[in-house]
Each structure stands twice: as structure tokens, then as C-alpha cells.
Length: 220
Image: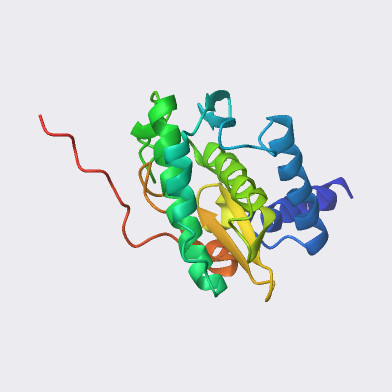
């Protein structure tokens, strides 16, 4: 019996990590993600009071304050107001790029390299947990400021290393009208590029961008 129980537990872990968790499991995971944001004081962010995760696993946090000029540029990303959810997702991706750029300049994470393990633990580098937590904070900020009107936060998406490559996580949102879920993944590109927003099913199936967007080296 212990042997069969062990096999059952291992298979259950595989299914959960592959993104094929039951609705109840996903709901619990979503609640844990929101609790994680609250524990880090990231669930009620204001433009002048953000707390950025970095250092891998949200080990470190740094305060970020957006100037009025910066916040106005973020708001401008949502003009004109999107008349479809697809257009709003493009606006969200653009706004995230601006928020990453502004936060990066204040915290040293502007040197973050996307989609790589080679720079792991280098100063300013972030892992997917840092990126996911920050994405959750940015999304709630924009939602609470009524800039996002056609989507809501679903939680955190996970895919596991046994079936779909290395462990990975990212923010998961959904279309308010259709309830279709999307994953917002900002890990793959260098700091300051628009986040990728793709259907959740594609992401759980192992989606990766065709091109990793990199910043041009500074002139010597």
C-alpha cells in the first residue's frame, strides 16, 4: 500500500506542475497567490508607493515611486479606451513595459536579462517568481485605477519541469466577457519590453516566444 500511495502522490505532483490541475486546485493556487501579494504589501499598490520584488524568489524588495509624468505616460498607454479585450491586452503589455522601465531605473533591475539562466543571481537579475509577483502588483494597480476594464486577475499559472521543461510561473488573467484565460509572461524578454500575453492553454503546453527581445549594448 505505501508503494501505491507514493506512486499516486508522484503522479498528482506531475499533473499539478504540468498545468493540468483541477479547478479546485487552481482556485486554491490563485488564493495563495493573492495571499502572497498581500504578505509582501503588493496587493494595494499606488503609483507613488510600489514594492518591487527582486533577488530571486522575491527575496528582496525595494520601494518604487512613479513621478506624475511617468504615471501619465502609463495612463496614456490606455488611450483611446479599448473597445475589445484583444486591444486591451495590447495596452496592458505596453503599460507593463513602461512600469518595468521606470521601476528598473530605481531598483537596478533595469539590467535584468530575459529568458536566461546564465545571469542567475547576478545583481539586478530577476527570476520568474519575481516577475510573476511584480506582474500581479502591476495588474492590480492598473485594475484599481480603472485603467483595465475588460480583464480580471485569475492568479498564478504554473507549469512543471517533468512534463513541460523547467519549472515556470507567470501571471494568469481572464477576459471578463468570455472568461477565456490568458497568461501574462514578462520573464522571457529583457527589462522594459512589452510582456507576452498568450492563451493559457498554449502557455501550459510549453509555449515560448519565437524571439527573445534583447536590449542593444550601450556604446563604448
